[in-house]
Length: 176
Image (cartoon, rainbow, N blue to C red; front, top):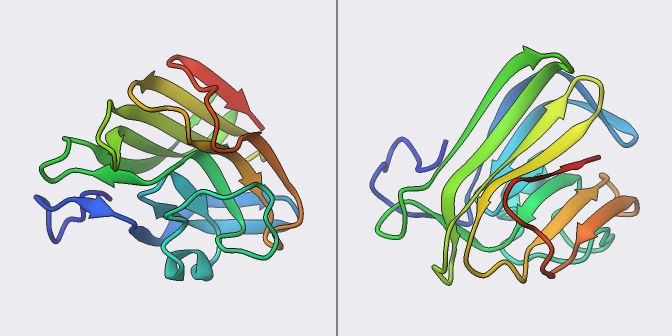
């Protein structure tokens, strides 16, 4: 989905694509969703207002009930840039089935933070069971400011793994 098909040689910064069908009903906190919105900034959201608010060019605390975005997954929330003259990065999604059930997967591949130090490759996997897995294949450069976690539609409930802090390394996974 990124770089955008209409402008394949251009860099992508602060963009959202969606709605994209998940392929099953996904239970997330108190709601169930069948589609998602994907942000270039390392987020996945579940409501249309997520797209209208650039899906978090600046990462905030999780949960954060009076600021947008809300209703999201944050596998690596930071100000990321994709493609163009900056990197050969891409963001793609897919569906499938494995030993854990049906899944919807989004991968951010060799993208960089806007400060252009190092690159990051990570993915989020949503299972029809409600499990969420964040996997980090290759991380380099400035990793001190990412936020990682999940937040409900009201911004009241959430679970933060990191908030603008170091703690992610290559070849790790987080299960929610």
